[in-house]
Image (cartoon, rainbow, N blue to C red; front, side, top):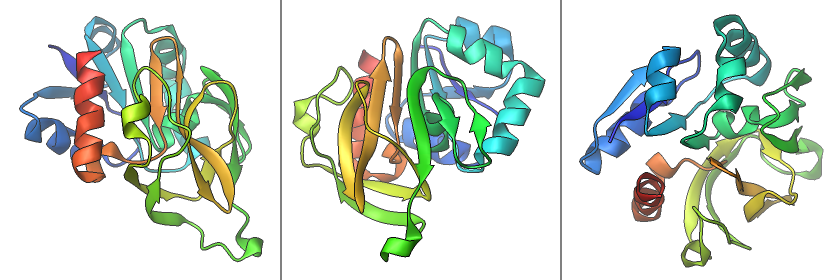
Length: 195
């Protein structure tokens, strides 16, 4: 199986590569459009800032390429947020694959921002995150969150309910980091690879 992790100006790519290696899977990290479009599976991880990253995606042509992909695609953390329509982080239009907005947690309500730690998945039900993931704890690190909507396939509550996972057609995404979420996270990556 040909798996490509998209290389762009965001961190956490190595963690995903290591997690796949633990599953016995070899992935290639690349920004080459031909390699990405010919992959069997594409993973779009990220830790970083939305506005600067969107500028990079536009300059490299990845902003046009990514929404056109037909193979199974997994966005993680910032990767998920960039798949949405708009982010309050830099007030920037994003890739508009998932028509939801990204909002900042309200620190004024006493919440610690960024949200960092283990939280339980609720209201789980999709092709990737099926009901067997209900109640699982996953690891989150983020200051912004994706609102809930018709493409939400799992929620988590941190001050307010938000989308822990979304999916639309061949596009799947998680706000949490499966590569840092122990056995449940490994199971999710295995499920993605077997779709």
